[in-house]
Structure formats: structure tokens, C-alpha cells
Image (cartoon, rainbow, N blue to C red; front, side):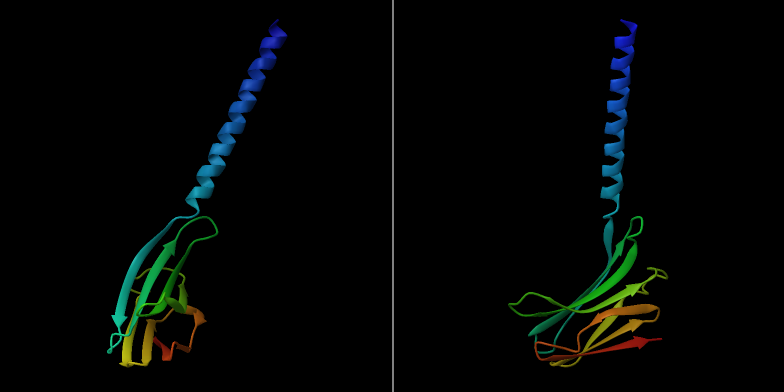
Length: 137
């Protein structure tokens, strides 16, 4: 009888170990998708036909941490289109990830960003709008 009770206790302990492991893995995986928007801005074109918008997202997690700024161009009545993506090693000092979006003309958008960012994607023209990008030191 004692042998059966010992086997049953071992099974219970084994199940608890498996459930604990599964719970720990789920908690770890859900923690890897942590992100927050830490900066955003927008700039309408002079003729109000377009809106340039940008946001910086900071991601956390083991092996997935990063800071990315994405600029979009939206034509009235259309979905936004990604026109620039920058990556930064850090979000500090405060404001380092912000970009300046200035309309030179209704068909020319000038974007400046502070140093220490890497351009991951850049469009040079979108929906008839020329896009210039410059690093500001």
C-alpha cells in the first residue's frame, strides 16, 4: 500500500512541476512583447492634402529590446504609408528619438533627426511627395 501512495505522490509532484513550468514559460513569453509609445508628433501639409506623422516605440524583452521611430505619410482619405524607420540604441537622453517634419512645399517633406540613429528604411517619394531626410548634429 505504501508503494502505491508513493507513486501517486510522485505523479502529483510531477504534474505540479509541469504546470509550474508551463505557467513560467507563458509569463516569460508574454513579457517579451512589452512596448510603449514614448514620443509622437504630426505635421499637416500646407494645402492640408497630406499629414506626416511619427512615433517612437520602445520595446522591452530578452533579445527583443529596441527603440524605433517610424514616420508615416497619409493622404486624406487613404491609409498611412510608412516612409522612414530609424533605430536607436537608447531613448536617452530625453528627446533623442524625436524627428522634425517640415513641409518645404505642399509636395516636399523634409525630415531631420538627431544623431546616433540608424536609417533602417527610407522612401524618397510617395504619392507625389518628395521626401528628404537629413541628420541634424
